[in-house]
Length: 172
Image (cartoon, rainbow, N blue to C red):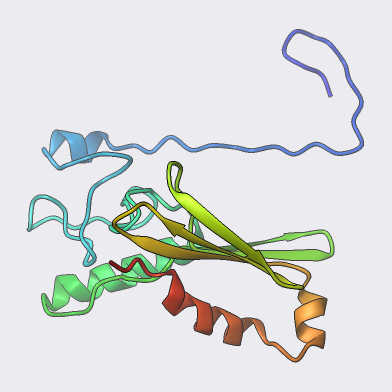
């Protein structure tokens, strides 16, 4: 690898993280509430009830974070579109979920870690689970790994996700 200063180094592997700067200019100019991204409710409604936002620029209404995964962008956008057509439609209330294939490992994360909150941790042969609480709310976070282990044990990923998704929603 050639660094910016011209120094050359050799590595066995390189991990590259590429960030994204959200373009919130239009929302800011429209006078919408903005924090980490555009502040929305479960239906994708912004601080102006006539304006909706969805996808990477919209904060998850429970977590206050922009969750940049295809699952959030797609599913939250579908719920927002339904709410635009029907104000009584159910909002988006799914726990953040993402996955990544890393060589022979399929890593899946359900839920989210928030700084400044207490965590209790439990690990099973193929599942890491955290209970996270900030004093007023609690969440579950689940990380699945070693897919051959849980498949050999007779577990299916969709069954695990369905079971644990209900546990990852914030509760009071």
